[in-house]
Length: 318
Picture 1 (cartoon, helix red, strand yellow):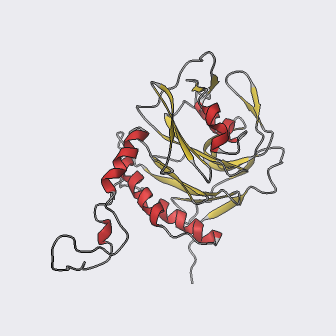
Picture 2 (cartoon, helix red, strand yellow):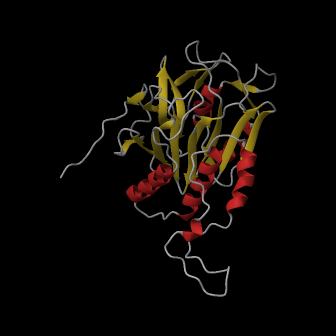
Protein backbone atom coordinates (compact mmCIF):
# COMPACT_ATOMS: atom_id res chain seq x y z
CA UNK A 1 0.00 0.00 0.00
CA UNK A 2 1.12 3.59 -0.52
CA UNK A 3 0.12 7.25 -0.29
CA UNK A 4 1.15 10.08 -2.63
CA UNK A 5 0.09 13.71 -2.98
CA UNK A 6 1.04 17.04 -4.52
CA UNK A 7 0.78 20.23 -2.51
CA UNK A 8 2.00 23.76 -3.05
CA UNK A 9 5.08 22.88 -5.09
CA UNK A 10 5.93 19.67 -3.25
CA UNK A 11 5.23 16.02 -3.96
CA UNK A 12 5.10 13.62 -1.02
CA UNK A 13 5.05 9.85 -1.01
CA UNK A 14 5.00 6.95 1.46
CA UNK A 15 6.01 3.57 0.08
CA UNK A 16 4.35 0.86 2.15
CA UNK A 17 5.54 -2.69 1.54
CA UNK A 18 6.38 -5.91 3.34
CA UNK A 19 10.10 -5.56 2.63
CA UNK A 20 12.73 -3.39 1.03
CA UNK A 21 13.48 -4.05 -2.64
CA UNK A 22 17.03 -2.80 -3.12
CA UNK A 23 15.85 0.77 -3.54
CA UNK A 24 18.30 3.65 -3.86
CA UNK A 25 18.01 7.29 -4.85
CA UNK A 26 18.91 7.40 -8.53
CA UNK A 27 19.56 10.46 -10.70
CA UNK A 28 19.24 9.78 -14.42
CA UNK A 29 21.06 12.41 -16.52
CA UNK A 30 19.83 13.85 -19.79
CA UNK A 31 20.12 11.69 -22.91
CA UNK A 32 20.39 8.41 -21.03
CA UNK A 33 19.55 5.35 -23.15
CA UNK A 34 16.44 3.37 -22.22
CA UNK A 35 15.93 0.27 -24.41
CA UNK A 36 12.17 -0.23 -24.70
CA UNK A 37 10.41 -3.56 -25.06
CA UNK A 38 8.78 -2.34 -28.29
CA UNK A 39 12.22 -2.53 -29.89
CA UNK A 40 13.08 1.17 -29.89
CA UNK A 41 15.70 3.11 -27.94
CA UNK A 42 14.45 6.06 -25.91
CA UNK A 43 16.75 8.89 -24.79
CA UNK A 44 15.35 11.29 -22.22
CA UNK A 45 15.46 15.01 -22.87
CA UNK A 46 15.12 15.88 -19.19
CA UNK A 47 17.05 14.54 -16.22
CA UNK A 48 15.12 12.95 -13.36
CA UNK A 49 15.65 11.87 -9.77
CA UNK A 50 13.75 9.43 -7.59
CA UNK A 51 13.73 6.13 -5.75
CA UNK A 52 14.56 3.16 -7.93
CA UNK A 53 15.94 -0.34 -8.13
CA UNK A 54 18.67 -0.49 -10.75
CA UNK A 55 18.77 -3.66 -12.87
CA UNK A 56 21.06 -3.99 -15.88
CA UNK A 57 21.79 -0.24 -15.66
CA UNK A 58 18.06 0.44 -15.94
CA UNK A 59 16.45 2.51 -13.14
CA UNK A 60 13.10 0.96 -12.22
CA UNK A 61 11.52 4.00 -10.58
CA UNK A 62 8.90 3.85 -7.85
CA UNK A 63 8.53 7.63 -8.12
CA UNK A 64 10.57 10.41 -9.69
CA UNK A 65 10.70 14.11 -10.58
CA UNK A 66 12.24 15.61 -13.69
CA UNK A 67 14.26 18.80 -13.85
CA UNK A 68 11.14 20.79 -14.83
CA UNK A 69 9.37 19.80 -11.61
CA UNK A 70 7.02 17.23 -13.16
CA UNK A 71 6.48 14.35 -10.72
CA UNK A 72 5.12 10.83 -11.06
CA UNK A 73 4.62 7.85 -8.75
CA UNK A 74 3.39 4.30 -9.19
CA UNK A 75 1.25 2.87 -6.36
CA UNK A 76 -0.03 -0.64 -5.70
CA UNK A 77 -3.32 -1.43 -7.47
CA UNK A 78 -3.99 -5.17 -7.00
CA UNK A 79 -6.90 -7.02 -8.63
CA UNK A 80 -7.84 -4.02 -10.78
CA UNK A 81 -4.66 -3.37 -12.80
CA UNK A 82 -4.58 -4.95 -16.27
CA UNK A 83 -1.84 -4.91 -18.89
CA UNK A 84 -2.23 -5.95 -22.52
CA UNK A 85 -0.59 -7.49 -25.60
CA UNK A 86 0.75 -5.09 -28.20
CA UNK A 87 -2.03 -3.07 -29.83
CA UNK A 88 -2.10 -1.49 -33.28
CA UNK A 89 -2.16 2.32 -33.52
CA UNK A 90 -1.10 2.66 -29.89
CA UNK A 91 2.07 3.71 -28.10
CA UNK A 92 2.98 0.35 -26.54
CA UNK A 93 5.24 0.60 -23.50
CA UNK A 94 5.57 -1.49 -20.37
CA UNK A 95 4.50 -0.29 -16.89
CA UNK A 96 8.11 0.03 -15.69
CA UNK A 97 8.95 2.18 -18.74
CA UNK A 98 6.12 4.62 -18.09
CA UNK A 99 7.84 6.93 -15.58
CA UNK A 100 11.07 7.53 -17.53
CA UNK A 101 9.16 7.70 -20.82
CA UNK A 102 6.85 10.49 -19.65
CA UNK A 103 9.17 12.41 -17.33
CA UNK A 104 11.96 12.17 -19.88
CA UNK A 105 10.20 14.23 -22.53
CA UNK A 106 7.44 16.39 -21.02
CA UNK A 107 7.49 19.52 -18.86
CA UNK A 108 3.90 19.62 -17.63
CA UNK A 109 0.71 17.63 -17.20
CA UNK A 110 -1.03 19.75 -19.84
CA UNK A 111 1.66 18.95 -22.41
CA UNK A 112 1.29 15.18 -22.06
CA UNK A 113 -2.51 14.83 -21.90
CA UNK A 114 -3.09 13.96 -25.56
CA UNK A 115 -0.06 11.65 -25.57
CA UNK A 116 -1.29 9.63 -22.58
CA UNK A 117 -4.54 8.79 -24.34
CA UNK A 118 -2.56 6.88 -26.98
CA UNK A 119 -0.62 4.72 -24.50
CA UNK A 120 -1.29 1.02 -23.99
CA UNK A 121 0.62 -0.78 -21.24
CA UNK A 122 2.29 -4.00 -22.33
CA UNK A 123 2.04 -7.18 -20.29
CA UNK A 124 5.79 -7.81 -20.51
CA UNK A 125 8.05 -8.18 -17.46
CA UNK A 126 11.47 -6.59 -17.18
CA UNK A 127 12.98 -10.08 -17.00
CA UNK A 128 12.19 -13.51 -15.56
CA UNK A 129 13.30 -12.46 -12.08
CA UNK A 130 11.46 -9.11 -12.02
CA UNK A 131 7.74 -9.61 -12.77
CA UNK A 132 5.30 -6.78 -13.33
CA UNK A 133 3.58 -5.22 -10.32
CA UNK A 134 -0.09 -4.17 -10.50
CA UNK A 135 0.13 -0.38 -10.35
CA UNK A 136 -1.67 2.84 -11.02
CA UNK A 137 -0.03 6.27 -11.24
CA UNK A 138 -0.34 9.90 -10.21
CA UNK A 139 1.31 12.55 -12.38
CA UNK A 140 1.55 16.09 -11.02
CA UNK A 141 3.04 19.50 -11.64
CA UNK A 142 2.36 22.64 -9.63
CA UNK A 143 -0.97 23.30 -11.37
CA UNK A 144 -2.74 19.98 -11.87
CA UNK A 145 -2.66 16.23 -11.37
CA UNK A 146 -3.76 13.19 -13.36
CA UNK A 147 -4.51 9.63 -12.30
CA UNK A 148 -3.70 6.77 -14.70
CA UNK A 149 -5.40 3.42 -14.16
CA UNK A 150 -4.97 0.61 -16.67
CA UNK A 151 -7.96 -1.65 -16.09
CA UNK A 152 -9.83 -4.26 -18.10
CA UNK A 153 -11.39 -1.38 -20.05
CA UNK A 154 -8.01 0.01 -21.06
CA UNK A 155 -6.14 3.05 -19.81
CA UNK A 156 -8.40 5.34 -17.77
CA UNK A 157 -7.25 8.93 -17.19
CA UNK A 158 -8.82 11.03 -14.43
CA UNK A 159 -8.35 14.69 -13.60
CA UNK A 160 -7.36 14.66 -9.93
CA UNK A 161 -8.79 17.75 -8.26
CA UNK A 162 -7.57 16.56 -4.84
CA UNK A 163 -3.98 15.81 -6.00
CA UNK A 164 -3.91 12.55 -3.99
CA UNK A 165 -3.60 8.85 -4.75
CA UNK A 166 -3.62 5.83 -2.45
CA UNK A 167 -4.75 2.35 -3.55
CA UNK A 168 -8.01 0.47 -4.19
CA UNK A 169 -10.85 1.00 -4.99
CA UNK A 170 -10.53 2.71 -8.40
CA UNK A 171 -10.23 6.48 -8.29
CA UNK A 172 -13.91 7.41 -8.85
CA UNK A 173 -14.77 5.84 -5.49
CA UNK A 174 -12.34 8.12 -3.67
CA UNK A 175 -13.80 11.16 -5.45
CA UNK A 176 -17.24 10.22 -4.13
CA UNK A 177 -16.15 9.09 -0.66
CA UNK A 178 -14.75 12.48 0.41
CA UNK A 179 -18.32 13.83 0.46
CA UNK A 180 -18.84 11.83 3.65
CA UNK A 181 -16.38 14.11 5.46
CA UNK A 182 -17.52 17.57 4.38
CA UNK A 183 -18.46 18.39 7.98
CA UNK A 184 -14.87 18.29 9.26
CA UNK A 185 -13.41 21.58 10.40
CA UNK A 186 -10.24 22.80 12.06
CA UNK A 187 -12.19 25.66 13.68
CA UNK A 188 -13.40 25.73 17.28
CA UNK A 189 -16.93 24.24 16.95
CA UNK A 190 -20.15 25.97 17.95
CA UNK A 191 -23.15 24.38 19.65
CA UNK A 192 -25.73 23.57 16.97
CA UNK A 193 -27.37 20.85 19.05
CA UNK A 194 -28.91 22.75 21.96
CA UNK A 195 -29.80 26.28 23.05
CA UNK A 196 -27.45 25.99 26.03
CA UNK A 197 -24.32 27.30 24.26
CA UNK A 198 -22.37 24.17 25.14
CA UNK A 199 -18.60 24.45 24.99
CA UNK A 200 -16.19 21.69 23.90
CA UNK A 201 -14.06 20.37 26.74
CA UNK A 202 -10.92 20.42 24.59
CA UNK A 203 -9.53 21.18 21.16
CA UNK A 204 -10.00 19.08 18.04
CA UNK A 205 -13.75 18.50 18.31
CA UNK A 206 -14.22 19.69 14.76
CA UNK A 207 -12.24 16.68 13.54
CA UNK A 208 -14.40 14.01 15.17
CA UNK A 209 -15.00 11.37 12.53
CA UNK A 210 -11.77 11.83 10.60
CA UNK A 211 -10.45 8.36 9.64
CA UNK A 212 -7.54 6.98 11.61
CA UNK A 213 -7.13 3.51 10.15
CA UNK A 214 -4.66 2.45 7.45
CA UNK A 215 -7.09 1.46 4.71
CA UNK A 216 -6.58 3.21 1.34
CA UNK A 217 -9.84 5.17 1.49
CA UNK A 218 -9.09 6.39 5.01
CA UNK A 219 -5.54 7.41 4.13
CA UNK A 220 -6.92 9.33 1.15
CA UNK A 221 -9.35 11.30 3.33
CA UNK A 222 -6.86 11.99 6.12
CA UNK A 223 -4.22 13.15 3.65
CA UNK A 224 -6.76 15.46 2.02
CA UNK A 225 -7.80 16.88 5.38
CA UNK A 226 -4.23 17.54 6.46
CA UNK A 227 -2.98 19.12 3.27
CA UNK A 228 -6.06 21.36 3.08
CA UNK A 229 -5.31 22.68 6.58
CA UNK A 230 -1.53 22.58 6.89
CA UNK A 231 0.40 25.83 7.19
CA UNK A 232 2.96 26.48 4.46
CA UNK A 233 5.80 28.95 4.99
CA UNK A 234 8.39 30.69 2.83
CA UNK A 235 11.30 28.62 4.15
CA UNK A 236 12.08 25.41 2.28
CA UNK A 237 13.11 23.48 5.40
CA UNK A 238 9.88 24.28 7.23
CA UNK A 239 7.75 23.29 4.24
CA UNK A 240 9.61 20.02 3.80
CA UNK A 241 9.02 19.28 7.48
CA UNK A 242 5.30 19.90 7.02
CA UNK A 243 5.14 17.47 4.09
CA UNK A 244 6.83 14.79 6.18
CA UNK A 245 4.40 15.45 9.05
CA UNK A 246 1.50 14.75 6.67
CA UNK A 247 3.21 11.57 5.50
CA UNK A 248 3.85 10.51 9.10
CA UNK A 249 0.13 10.85 9.86
CA UNK A 250 -0.70 8.09 7.34
CA UNK A 251 2.47 5.99 7.75
CA UNK A 252 2.30 2.36 8.82
CA UNK A 253 4.13 1.11 11.91
CA UNK A 254 5.57 -2.41 11.85
CA UNK A 255 3.09 -4.81 13.40
CA UNK A 256 0.04 -2.58 12.86
CA UNK A 257 -0.93 -4.05 9.47
CA UNK A 258 -0.57 -7.64 8.26
CA UNK A 259 -0.93 -8.84 4.69
CA UNK A 260 -2.91 -11.86 3.50
CA UNK A 261 0.36 -13.80 3.77
CA UNK A 262 0.72 -12.64 7.42
CA UNK A 263 3.64 -10.36 6.58
CA UNK A 264 4.10 -6.93 8.13
CA UNK A 265 3.12 -4.07 5.83
CA UNK A 266 5.01 -0.94 6.87
CA UNK A 267 6.26 2.38 5.51
CA UNK A 268 9.65 1.45 4.06
CA UNK A 269 10.49 5.05 3.21
CA UNK A 270 8.92 8.49 2.88
CA UNK A 271 10.03 11.11 0.39
CA UNK A 272 9.36 14.72 -0.53
CA UNK A 273 10.27 16.22 -3.90
CA UNK A 274 10.62 20.00 -4.22
CA UNK A 275 9.32 21.00 -7.64
CA UNK A 276 10.99 24.41 -7.51
CA UNK A 277 14.43 23.39 -6.27
CA UNK A 278 14.84 19.96 -7.87
CA UNK A 279 15.64 18.47 -4.47
CA UNK A 280 14.75 14.94 -3.38
CA UNK A 281 14.29 14.49 0.39
CA UNK A 282 13.81 11.11 2.03
CA UNK A 283 13.83 9.25 5.31
CA UNK A 284 13.57 5.53 6.01
CA UNK A 285 11.64 3.49 8.54
CA UNK A 286 14.85 2.86 10.46
CA UNK A 287 16.23 6.41 10.28
CA UNK A 288 14.06 9.48 10.88
CA UNK A 289 16.82 11.85 9.79
CA UNK A 290 15.83 13.65 6.57
CA UNK A 291 18.40 13.34 3.78
CA UNK A 292 18.55 15.46 0.63
CA UNK A 293 20.00 14.91 -2.84
CA UNK A 294 19.88 17.86 -5.24
CA UNK A 295 19.58 17.46 -8.98
CA UNK A 296 21.38 20.64 -10.01
CA UNK A 297 24.88 20.36 -11.49
CA UNK A 298 24.33 16.63 -12.14
CA UNK A 299 21.82 16.68 -14.99
CA UNK A 300 24.47 16.37 -17.70
CA UNK A 301 26.47 13.47 -16.24
CA UNK A 302 27.38 10.55 -18.47
CA UNK A 303 25.94 7.81 -16.25
CA UNK A 304 23.48 7.19 -13.45
CA UNK A 305 24.24 8.83 -10.10
CA UNK A 306 23.29 6.34 -7.37
CA UNK A 307 22.92 7.19 -3.68
CA UNK A 308 22.51 4.27 -1.25
CA UNK A 309 20.02 4.92 1.53
CA UNK A 310 21.26 5.78 4.99
CA UNK A 311 19.20 3.45 7.22
CA UNK A 312 21.31 3.90 10.35
CA UNK A 313 19.34 5.80 12.99
CA UNK A 314 20.98 9.15 13.70
CA UNK A 315 20.26 10.10 17.32
CA UNK A 316 21.74 13.41 18.46
CA UNK A 317 22.86 12.93 22.06
CA UNK A 318 23.35 15.99 24.27
